[in-house]
Structure formats: structure tokens, C-alpha cells
Image (cartoon, rainbow, N blue to C red; front, side, top):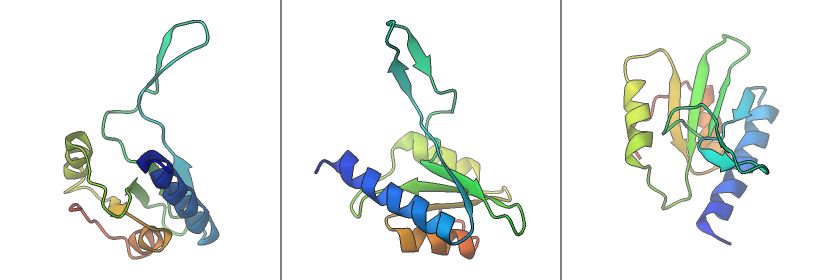
Length: 114
């Protein structure tokens, strides 16, 4: 399985766990793709936007989760996005498992380091 495949599997398990814990979760797709008629389509999200975002229904607090494999590292644009949240009232973390992601959201952590 490729690194992208492993990260996708982790992401899927995180999405399930967050939903089961009662959190609203959305998968975000960043980048450009070529359409069937040859045109390029840009998702519109900024470079470095985390893999998952959502909110806690009980208080409306927004969260961002960057998904990585156990040895994965964030790119510079991902670090920059996280740093932009430093003084904001948002939850952010790098999760390498479903348990980590639920802990980040539940405890409203702001983990800006890998």
C-alpha cells in the first residue's frame, strides 16, 4: 500500500470515529484536477488546508485535522496554515489515528507541532 493509501485509510477511520463521537466532519479536497473535457478545476481551498474539518454540535467550535501516517511530516504550506490559527479560537491538530483525532476534538486541543 502506498503512503497515500495508508493516509487515506487513516483518514477514513478518523472520519468514522469523529462521526460516531457525535462530531460533524467534512473531508476537504485541495488541489487541481483535470476535467473530462480537458479543463483544470481548482477546489478553491487555500494551499495547506487540512484534510478534515468540522464542528462540535454542542458548542459550534470549529476544528481542523491534518491526517498523517505515523512517520508523515507536514509540508511547509500545512505548517503555515496551522500557524495562522495560533491566536484563533479554533481546534487544530495532526492526527495519526482515529483515537488521536477524537482526543484533539473532544479536549479542544491546539497542537501546532508534528
